[in-house]
Image 1: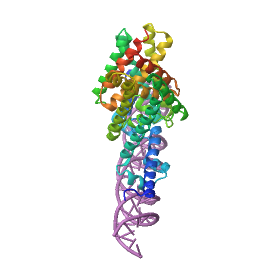
Image 2: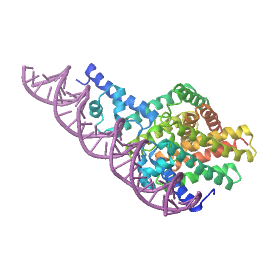
Image 3: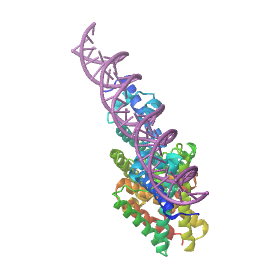
Image 4: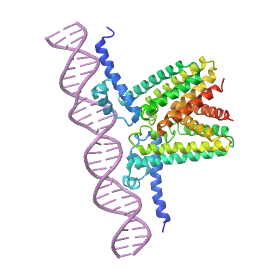
Length: 198
Length: 198
DNA sequence: CACTGGATAGAGCGTTCGCTCTAGTCCCAG
DNA sequence: CTGGGACTAGAGCGAACGCTCTATCCAGTG
């Protein structure tokens, strides 16, 4: 009664395919630079389906795409931080991982949230809010790791602010320069900064 | 024979008005989110004038806008860094200044280069290159300040990478959160990081 | 069996996009 | 006075935009 396997899978399938396609395209082309028709075409769904699942139109779809990017990066963050007991080494692993992802996409796939949030402040406020929630969640993950490593709540929270901000900026700089250097340097400096609080 | 004062002033006037308007609008709405007609309308110039000065169209105008943002931030960077002999205090003054600018615009005017570079990697490569040059110039200004304060070339260059990246990221985070906190925290952490090299 | 409602399908709406084009204005050189 | 180049002016092009609309399909239910 709750779940009819094939039916619900098909349903979830189309919807999820649309969101994933939207997220991928908007990550590369930005929110304004990506058209609804392009999304529906590349997702293999028609406009009718798209507006069936997202009656709020482009803005609702964009918000869903931001949330997907949020979840995916939260996952990556947790995995990478959990793999290393020491926060310093975990940060180095994290920046290396981000640099690798950037290289693999020929410097096209930057932060999925950054690309959505620029230029949408006045035109799509829902996206701004979803992005703010993403940043807050990411900071929480980093702060949690630092607290678990023995840092005070205050220090951990402040360090988390700078870690997330620096990662964002270094990823952007790496993308623009088409070089992993900004991320690698940022990793070493963040590790050094964290170590200075011990 | 070279310069006819009134004539050339008028010429430069219209051209500069277009670039300044383009820069201001694209800073808030992004490159793709800003239309040529909106720029010409708000600049008080017609389409004919715009395409007279920028035969390369939107991309050439966007590139000019990036360069203007580059020059303006370079100026701010130099002024702020020159006003304080110690790099640590200068960085605190810089983040405070950026936070104030953001507040004054109701969190709308972020980094003029960031807003242009997102989503234009494949559609407008000229803009990417101009943005890369801007970042490099800014890093040079910061590195120069650090070298003047006695840091080694290597340390100064690496620190400049992180300073610029963190400023970019913190400005974005502050904009999204509509709060000066990310920038203020970033300022203190950057000062601490720089001090750790002494 | 008819019926219902979720899902698919895409033609087409009005608007805006970036850009081209021709005509006209202005000012100075010859 | 006149010719010519720099600049202004805006109508209009084809294409793409976000979105609405009606029509159809189909599995599940009474």
